Image 1 (tube, rainbow, N blue to C red):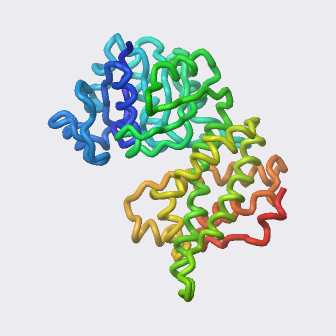
Image 2 (tube, rainbow, N blue to C red):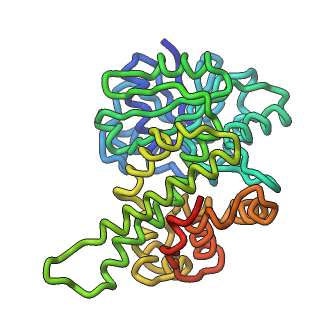
Image 3 (spheres, one colour):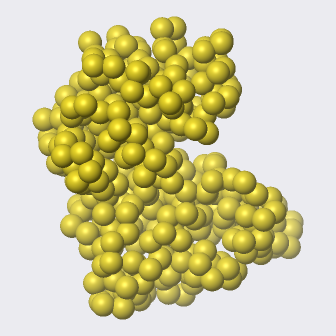
Length: 352
């Protein structure tokens, strides 16, 4: 068995303690500077206050300033469970604390915008660490439909582990697989990572339908608005396919667990869907952030703001066909220009 050090004591990083512990690994959970209350709770009682569960016995919890001590000289795997906004912070800590290369698996979702394309975060992290420290980190990422609260109580969960190093991905699957946690290998790093990031972005649009229902006149049969949500879901998959193919990814990632599966799960609940609900009610993104979702981190919205310039540049250069991305364009406008989210219905099934 191995020593696994998890950096990030939020819900997803902490939920990964379950399969890791159940496979007999020695688990060390390190909080970020935002996780002090969580780490104190785990140290005192073993209970994670946000997951509302008691983590398995034997987990050692550390504050971020003790990351190097947590790593020791025996860590065999690092799990990065920080938010996308914390990637630079995590790179700093890896470069400071690591004395030799240790395999890393990322559960962080997001993309790094270059001038004319998007780069997967694992590639970004590996390149930054190598440039700053000279170390070549074996790196992988986990994608697919995984709600932290369900994993934390051992509900059946299927994920995809992807890496440019297939041997590493297969090793990680073997290390983490349990009777309820079912990882599988994919070689499609960019495809899996685009799906993992953009499912949050497109879930905003799917969530619009439920919010817009509240603005509609009540009907005698109390009809819902699921048909509209399904049309938007279908268009999201179509446009996700275009984004993945443009970056060299494969269709299998889009129609499989990383794409359709993860989008389905994300649309069931969560902050991205709640933002969509508010946009459906007629609020703008800024009104929502200043009002009902003040202080909330909405990763799909942050992704849209961060990649807007790159995506629009790719459209302008013809790398992406703007006419084939009407939902993407509408979301980018709503997030960066603070305009109402106007669903372009008549453009959907005319797109490539």
